Amino acid sequence: MKILILTLALASSLFAGGLNWVDSMGKALELATKKHKPIMVFVEAEHCPWCSRMLEEVLEEKDTVKVLNRDFVLVKLDIDGKDAREYFPNTVMTPTTYFISADSKPLLMVEGYVNSFSFYSYLSDVDKKIAELKGK
Image 1 (cartoon, one colour):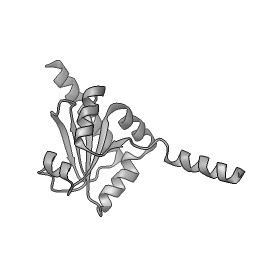
Image 2 (tube, one colour):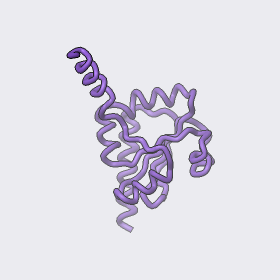
Image 3 (cartoon, rainbow, N blue to C red):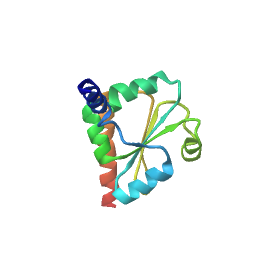
Image 4 (spheres, one colour):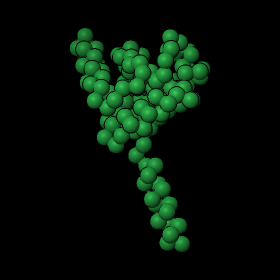
């Protein structure tokens, strides 16, 4: 019994603290408005090795998870899914990461895999863009 409890505790700790994805733009827009947060949209394809690599090496890195969950509403969409086709019809490559304001203003689009250093640079650009929008 002790082994079962330890195994369950270890398993839950491995999966705890991941990214808090929502599965639709409708939910993302609703949450963004409610929480006054911008949205990060990660558009991927089912069999995209670069998408998996970016998720594992960049987005799911411990410190990045904290920042993204704290500062953004996160939505992950399949490029062939209804929401991706409706909201981001011009997406031609995966992964593509979009940053949009809570009121649906585009902030930044990043095509392809980016490493952690570049991703944090883009987050800084998003912060600057949000500050500009608030200053207007």
